[in-house]
Image 1 (cartoon, rainbow, N blue to C red):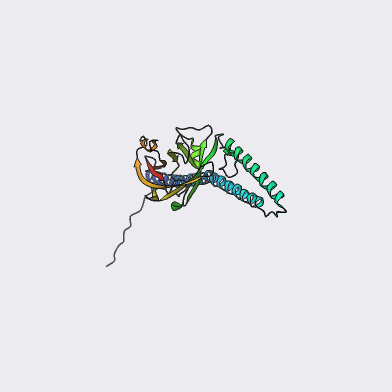
Image 2 (cartoon, one colour):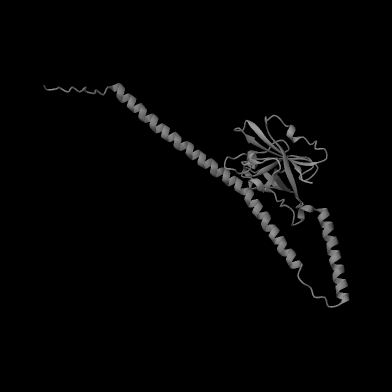
Length: 266
């Protein structure tokens, strides 16, 4: 018995053609949007890295200047052959006079000391002037950045340009390494740059803060918490006569603030 196979003929109607056309447009639009978003992300990451690289350039410049200072000190400490007692007394007198003069100059203007942190005024692409006021180093999370401040200082907020470059001085009337609460703010980057690894700090971890005079003090983490952006209690200067640091960054996509409190190691 023969079997008759019947196939249905597919008719391409105008409605089907229209749907295919719409699907093609939607597909190409989706691909275009994905490419656009990827390009934006890549450019944003490149721009962040470029801005943040400025902070490393400042640190490299400081290290270079410190190396020059060491070489000059080595030259000054060259061996001198003493010929007689009269020459020795004269040389000692000249040395004492030189030391006295240097001490007076240091007291008059600490910013001219080559061992000090560079206080050169820099400028962003938008014309905002800023300078280095300290250096923060946290070995546990491999962090080392200059602390920068707008010129003149703005105690309330910082332009976005400065926050993109490095960590910023936020609050602390007495300055770094002085009695009070010295507050530092920084962006949170998922790549780990700036304060991107701040959440990894634990109680007992050590941070080092170097001030304008070249003095470095160690601070130990004693508290960490997440607060609402409107909660400014962490910036209080009531430290009972102690030296403290407060490190602040964003968390939860900017909806909250991560606060890490540190106290000087004595």
